[in-house]
Length: 129
Image (cartoon, rainbow, N blue to C red; front, side, top):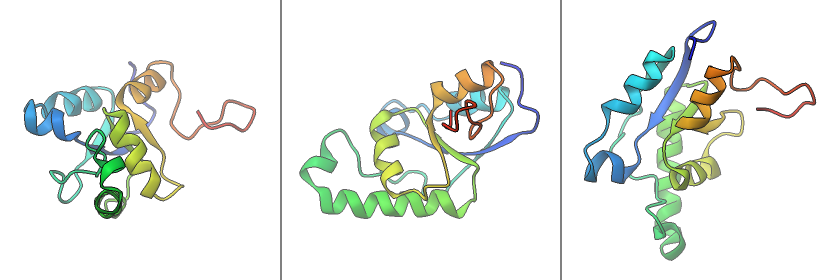
């Protein structure tokens, strides 16, 4: 996609299985950077967000502690948005993230950039894209 008019400051969250089990960390960052995104690295990037498949259903108290910790670390680097490639992580982090910080799946952000939309823009009817 064409680069955005100015670099987006995005915190990237690595899904545990992708980063730890499969060893994939750089590819998502390269794609985002090539699309004009400034990728920010949170403290304790390697710590689980608490979703872990069904973990948040069977261990909700521990999952909440992890979710809050992950959200705090992401917010501390003051991103414009948070990006992750895992829907479980996305919903878990979204529950604890400040409502003013959008969180998008990597594919959602790339689509928006491809069509020339900036995260946080509205569709004309007041709904955020």
